[in-house]
Image (cartoon, rainbow, N blue to C red):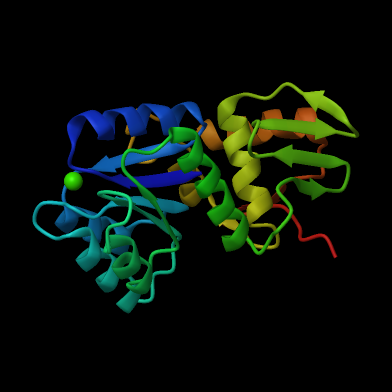
Length: 220
Ligand code: CA
């Protein structure tokens, strides 16, 4: 899962980037509202963590223009303090949720998971798929109740494919979900992770759609 983090405070941004990365997210960090707006127009993210007080374009302006352009990526805003009106303006401008500074990182992680559930149309925290169960909170995967040993990248790839079940995801989309703007990627990385997941979870789970990408069928 790829997260766009927009925060101009170096210390907080650094803590958020490393914390979210440890949670298994791919994090792209930008520090002003103008570049964030451009990134949201041209790239695909699974969620956005958006500070409101930003240089060049405020978080509120970024929110408004993003929603006006029909981009419905889940957005959680960081507001300056408890009780401020920022959260009201932010929610009304199209934010899905907020946390007020200072906040507990665990609360932010839980809110991001909740947003992802809603975006995928789920209420149940665990993702069940046939004999496979994925738990986003503990980053664990079970097959017939038995815990499977998978790497953080494999987890991210499986999570992304399950949340998008019934849709084909291109190699490019999957690579972005796994690595963001990290340029040091082996071009076969996605194939290697898919190969490993098939070995661990069954050959039929992930389908290759030739010339397009990969998908997990929707369970009916
Ligand atoms: Ca700020």
